[in-house]
Length: 353
Image (cartoon, rainbow, N blue to C red; front, side):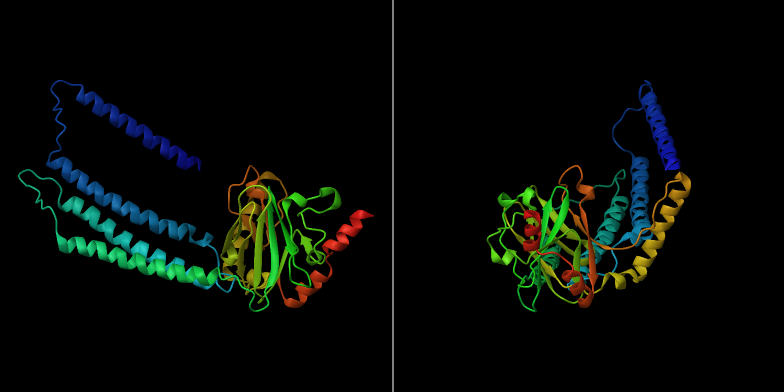
């Protein structure tokens, strides 16, 4: 970083000296002060356009080679492959168009540069060209929009088919709380006005609602692999966004209303830890941690991959720390974990004693 800053300073100093030299030249009476570019200037600018084209392509290739490894691994949800395919198609089209248009733009800037004695041909319109550069984007964008709407409709199809697990994600500055619907798989009614910290009613559940009695409130999200999950989301204070990147899932949590999203996890946490991309990322991260630990003397524990729930809205000063661990496990492991949790009714009874 120090080397990069030093080079940047040197470049800026060189530019400043160059500009001062030009100012000095312009201040001389015998200097030609004409603002009209000559053939040499136009040719020089034409070559600069080609150089800038090479720079654009070079920085693009460098970015993919250098930072492609930080992209998300294979999707861990059933709908994730559709999401990734839509993204791939969009990016391929964008890069093809970018490569062609930028190459033509910079080539024409050189080929048709100003030259003494050459006059530019002007004509008011060309119906054929107008039709071509209008209809092609229309067709491509219409196809992308229709495909995107079809994919988004399938992804956001929240229904009760296939016996989904019902879970509420409750957002507040700056943490998440999960509430499971219990044995009846129906969440009890709740309202932030019913929150009673003294009685351990931290989510504002309606204590008179029998559906709330078997609800389970936790700070760590457990999901059974291969089972559809319907998430119902609330916010206590400001706008949050439930973001689960490995599952390609995101939905805003809006104060005063309930939003929904659903997906089916297809890989357990242990299975995802064996993914080659995750293995490489863990090794790379722990290498950096080990180097930092050796340099500073501070003990930094090795990192182990876990799915995570994040907030994808800037919701306040501690937004960066608003996250919850997600564990995807087998049905048997999930049932055993759930059996060890206290229900809302038992928690209220314990707090009343």
